[in-house]
Structures are given as structure tokens and as C-alpha cells.
Image (tube, rainbow, N blue to C red; front, side):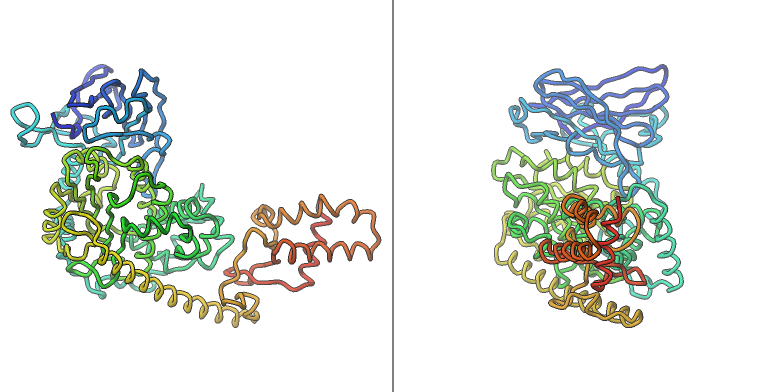
Length: 598
């Protein structure tokens, strides 16, 4: 019996619940459907010892997830899913996903005593479908196969059905475009993607207005307050707009999610850089080690498909077990954003070609412990990036991965799903199949068995490093030129905006004291520290001192912040885009005001 998943089987009438169950060699697969005004479907792939339903989709497109204990009869608690950057229902957090699909390759003991949950990664295609999978009232859908029952027909996976529905909903022109994108035959010229400057300015203004009115954007607000020049840069915002075909609402949601994930993965300081730095955010030993395995690769500009589109390559089987999921996500974010920010206007419009490998590891029967946690967390991260997927190819060397592929298909949005193709064959055969999609197998840093080809990998890493160094040099020079022009226009000495040692932009850190009014200034870590120092160590003496003694106390506090703490006193430039150093007199005034406050 195959474990490919199910298609909903609808019915009408009074509220009731129906459950379909079948079993393969080691797992019990449960499908339950509740009818009564709202259509719901559930899938559970769990160990034989438990038959609880563990996931469901509500009629409004959000997800419910029920936890089930594999080793016993656990009670489930429903949790409603959240929306992702594109407005679709997002996967549940990893806390609801631990142990899910612990063994898809047939080991009956792999999850015998662990808590398991299974996920239904929702999609808009099921939102209002009540029995819409095959005529009035619904019907199971099958595909010809030598396996399974019902006259040799195997049931299609949910992902395959959704993909078929999406393709059916496209117009003839949209379907032709999707097929051409998938096979790499679409030629796009620079003249075709160039927009009128007035239209671009209008879209940027609409995007700024939308971001201002949005709620729940703490990471974006932090970036905008601390690093306004980098956050407001038109280059990054245009990349988000091109990724969603100039849809302002979608671009705004992606930007908010982008800053949230960036802060979670790399910290607040990373918000002040338009690109993740290999030596700063990725400078720790664990992240560098994950990069060296070559599991995440954005091929350099010299390596593209037949119509010149950039290629992203992912081979998770190259990573050891265990590997930190957070370090994997950091590398995933760093590699993709590094490649995206090197794309020009034409590349962003053409889109990115993704090649994802799902190959069995050396044990041939177990997935790594981090596998599902990474996939659940990487989907919302990928959806938050300014990336347009032109085609996505998932190469699998085992039919056991079909359930995984199905969940991947359901988790992505419609535009990507119609450009998604799985290939079930050995790595060697998959690489030859990719040539029909305009992708040269000689570009991949693996040998014919799917193992690392060290010379090829090192060559690609060198090309990537050289490309990043050149891009960093260009970005740095553009920033210095922009700041120089801005300082000149505002009659501000350049050394008050740029650090004199390395000519980098002056940006606040946790030790600095920021000059200004408002909650954002009051809540800054450096300002809070100044208030605590004054209140705890100097306020009582200040109240009982003479005028001369008070002047000395103020000076003592000012020097303590600058010399002992290592902080600076900063204020925003008149145009509000940068921070600048203030004079000694302004520093004294700030400390005096702190003494006066309660």
C-alpha cells in the first residue's frame, strides 16, 4: 500500500465525521472529514500505536493542528494557524511539529516513544472547497499505478491535486507562461522590464504609506528608527515590489516579515546592514561550518540556466546529523539574500531557478533529526524574501519522499506551485532530466552518485566569495557617495556621520545614548542605562550639592558613559536618514535633563 496521502471525499447531509484508515508495513494513515456547514479535511501519518487525527484545515483557509502522543492515547488541543507574508495560512510553529513524520522510510521503531505531530500546510486552493475535488459532493481521485487498490489505481497526493486544480484555473496565456518559465525558454529583454520612473515613484510612495499604516511590525519599526537610511533604501524595496509583480500589499507584508526573520536569526544589529555579512552575522564557527558543507548554494553569475536566470541549489543530505536548525536557517537566509542582492533589474524580473535535492543518507532508512523542523521553519523565511521563483525542481531518489513533496506543494503559493516539478529518480538520472529544463548538470558540485565533488565545491565557493567582495565594495562606495552628498547638502562635517577609522556609517548600538523625544528614544538600551546610572549612583548627591558640585557630577556621568561604558551621544541628521555625533555642550545638556527627570 502506498503512503502518498489522500484527496478529500465530500458528502452532504447532517453534521457527521467520517474516517478512512489504511496501513502499510509500519505506519497507520488516517483521513477524517467533518461535514456540517464548514468543510474540513485532516491527514495523519503516524506510528501504528496511535490513530488520532493530528491536523485539519478550517474552511477559511487557516490551519488547525492537534498534538497526538505516539506511544499512547494523547488528548489533542487545537491551535489556529497564522498568516504568512503573502496572506496565506502559514505552517504551525515548530513547537507543534516536533517529531512529525519521524520515519517515512519504513522503520517501525523510530518514533515509538516520542510525541509526534503531523502538519497540514494549508493553501488558498482549499479555502471554500466543499466537495470540490471531483464533481458535486466530491470524489476520491486516483492516478494509474501498479500499486494500491481499486483496480491498480493509486490515490493522488494532496499536492498533486492542488497543482492540477491550479493549472486548470489558469488561462491559456498564464499556463503557457508557467510552462515556458518552468522549461527555461522565456526570453526577457531589459526593455520589457523597464518601467516609467513616474510609475516607480508612485509605487514606492504607495508602499511607504502602506508600511506606515500596518500593525504588528515591531522589527520593521526598530529598523526604521535605528537605521533609517538602510531601511528606506529604494533598491531593496524595488526588489520586493518586483518579486510580487508590483503588488503593494504583498510587498509590504513581505518587508515586515523579512525584518522579523532577520532580527530573529541575526539580532538587532543586522537590521542596520542591507546585506548579511559573512564576517559579522555569519562569523561564528558553527555557521561557517554549515556553509562549508555546500548544502546551500547560490551559484555565481558565471553559472546560470540557458536563458541566463540565477540558480539556487540545496542538498540537505550533505549536512551531518545533528545540525543546528537555527544555523541552517541562518545559512539559508544568508545565501539567498546574498544572491538576490547581486541581481539586477532584469534578473529580479526573470526570477530564480531552484533545484532542491532530497536524497537518502548513508543509512538509507532514517531522515535526519532536524529535517522536518528545518522545512517547517524555512517556508515562512523563504516567503518573506524579495524573491520571485521562476521554476522549482525537487529531485528525489526514493518514493518515500512523495509525502514530503506533497506537503511542500501544499505549503507554497499558487504562482510557485504551477512552476513546481518533482523528479523521482536516482541523482544521476535526475541531473539528466534537468537538462530538458535548461539546467546544465555540470554546474552542480556533486559527482554522479550525489556525493560532494570537493574541487567543484571549492571552485564555486571561491567564485561566490569573489562576487560578494566585489558587491560589498560597490555597495560601500555607493553608501559613502550618498552620505558625502547628504552631509554637504546639510552642512554637516563628514566625520560626524562616518566613523573616521573605517569610513563606515555611524549607527547606534546598545551602549549609545540617543538624543530626542518619544518612546523610541526612552526605550533605547543606552538611554535606559544612563537613567539607571543617574538614579542609582548620583541623584541623591546631586540634590544636596551646590551648583559647582552639580556641574562636576554631570561631567563625571558624561565621561563615564563615553570612557567606561564605551558609548556615544548621537542624534539624527536634519533629513532624518542618518545619525551623527553631537557636541560636548549637547552631551552635557542631555545628562542635565536626565538628572531633572523623575
